[in-house]
Image 1 (cartoon, rainbow, N blue to C red):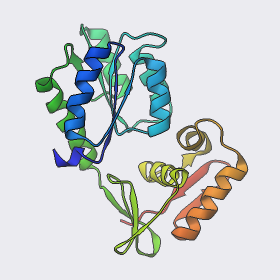
Image 2: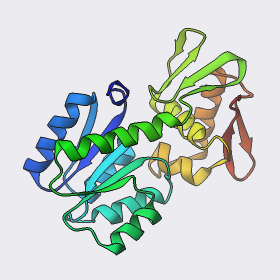
Image 3: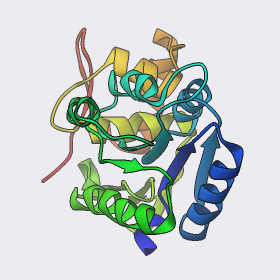
Length: 224
């Protein structure tokens, strides 16, 4: 699965042998695999690396897998999330719909169960347009997280990349200040910080590519 290579995957399980085996398998397919040993660490890693796919156990110390997913879904509806569980009942199925999960995996999580789920995640990500054209001939490759003008790559800082990525995720609506605060600044955004990122991005792309919606947030101008 070549499409998986550049995506970021986070695997969360409190049982070290299970986690180690899964991470080893995932690293065979993907260059960017991260791990966590419980729901709280998983949420912190999520905030730091912004994975494309999360695979998590349910029963873990500190906070459960479902509690962690609820925290993520409060501001992020698009990351692909798969939950692993020893038992599957109707309440879990209802939760899957509510939380927008790709699938519940019945433990033990084996390669033959994991591969089809990864293919589904990749398919859902790839089904969305992956190259977005901005003002003045700039293009953002969403899967590879890179910005180009023609064939020249434009180098972005980490916060510039996260800011632009989130705006493109939400291209059909305005991205709120609260969403930007959580996704880009991990809850520590200041007015000076956001203005600085917007100012620097507009220098690299176009003043018209990013517009401010007064009192609400920002929106990106993506051309059809």
